[in-house]
Amino acid sequence: MGIFASNRRFLWIFTTLILISLLLFAAEICFGSINIPISDTLSILLGNPSVHPGWDIIIFESRIPRALTAVAGGIALSVGGLLMQTLFRNPLAGPSVLGITSGSSLAVALVIMATSNSFFLHSVAGTAGIAFSAMGGALLVLLLLLIVSERLKDNVSLLIFGIMLGHFAGAIESILQHRASKESLRDFVLWGMGTFAESRQAEIIILVTITFIATGFVFFLLPALNLLLLGEDYAISMGLRVKRLRKQIILITGLLSGVTTAFCGPVAFIGLAVPHLSRALLRQSDHRRLFPVVLLLGSITALGSDLLSRLLEVPLNAITSALGAPVVIYIIIRGARAKAII
Image (cartoon, rainbow, N blue to C red; front, side, top):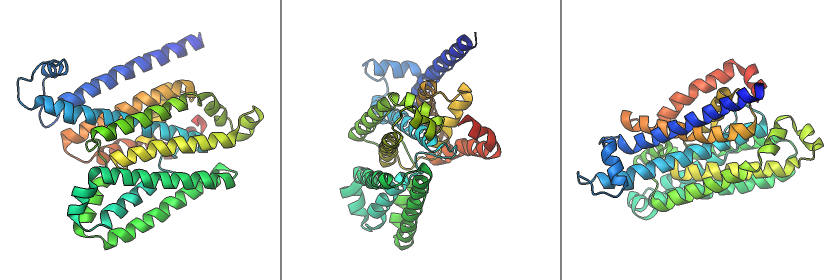
């Protein structure tokens, strides 16, 4: 009877989250500085000519790409957060904890603030140049982590190494900010606020493809992740190759957080908060059920945050921080209970 009730609860939650995500995706397309009625939106999506000039351009070239970027970015960050919290068994671990996001941020800082020529930045480097420099920085840090993980036997040492790496990158960023021109500093600050609106078609394809492949690979790791929750010694006794699994988790998280930071900026709190919200919703930490809920809740959080940021005309990270900070505060206050869940 308990198993039946649990299955029914999961199906109810899963179905509800699907409906909410579809509604938010539709709202992303319809609402903004120019509100487009649902009937006209459906007509345009079905290929009928727009009654109002420009509406079809707004939908196909601005809002649908933005919504797709939000979905992919939300999923990538949420899955990365889930993997990090499982690997380190730490409720405050997120996709940026290993310093990969800091590597992306440092690479962007070098491109923006070490280049004082604004014409070069916007005409030659542009959004694509910034995005791919961020991806390059993330991949370099990821490569370093994979090399170091060969020498470090425990996850705590790896966690400390990642945190220190992030602090080192932050120190270099501070030096660059101190010496940067006002224009370059402004551009870097704007990038740091995060956005789902700047990705072009080719970048969206890259983001969606990497997110799809990486999350698909996570699906096959779910039984191993459940074993890892019980402790490394138990997992090893059950035949799990923990060292290989750790490398796989680092690689997947690095790709997910790196590509998201590259094309969306350092979006805050989604990767940290969504796994905890999913556990609270399900009242369990079985990855076989937790994983699909994290996917849906990640896309819902990203879509909702982006919609609010557009309607309120505030930066994306202002919304994600306002939504995510209470979750972190709850984790700190109820630390013992949070650790029990993990």
